[in-house]
Image (cartoon, rainbow, N blue to C red; front, side, top):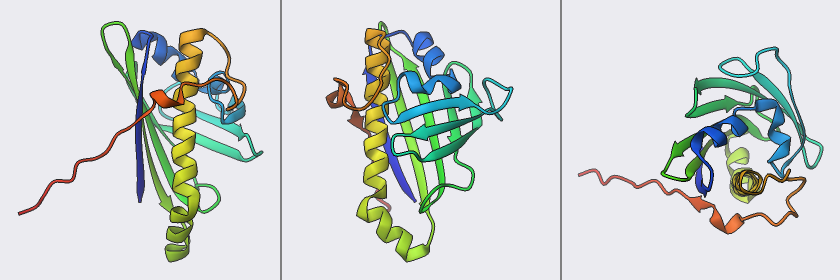
Length: 173
C-alpha cells in the first residue's frame, strides 16, 4: 500500500473551506485535474453520497463517501479502483487556525496485479497521484483566496505552498 499525505495553509476560515470541499458535486470549480463533476445520488453530503468525475485525460472516476465528520473531514473510496489501482481511499480534512485553515489530504493506494502492480506503482502511479494531490490542494487555495474558478492546471496555482507530511517511523527495541 502506498500512502500520500499533503497539506496546505489557506487564508480562509475553516467553515468556508469546509463549505467548498463538502460541495461534492462542485469539485470542478477548484480542482485543476477535474473537467466535469456531478453527484450521482440524491444525497448531497454524508456517507453514501456519490459523485462522478471526468478527469483531464477523459478518465471517468466514480467516488463514494464512506466517512463523514461534518465540518471536519470526509473520506471517499473509488469502488473497484481504476486502471492498475485496486483500491483508493482519500481523506480530506480541515483544521481551523486563528485567521486561516490547514487542509490535509491523505491518500491510500493499493495496486492490482501483484509484483507487476508494484512495479507500475514505482514507475509512476504514486507520482501521478502525488502530483494530483498537490494540484488539487493548490487549486483549492487559489479558489478560496481569489474567488476564481480553477479551469486547468496551467493556472497560476500556489504549488509551492503544498507541504508533504512525512510519517515518523518508530524504532522498535
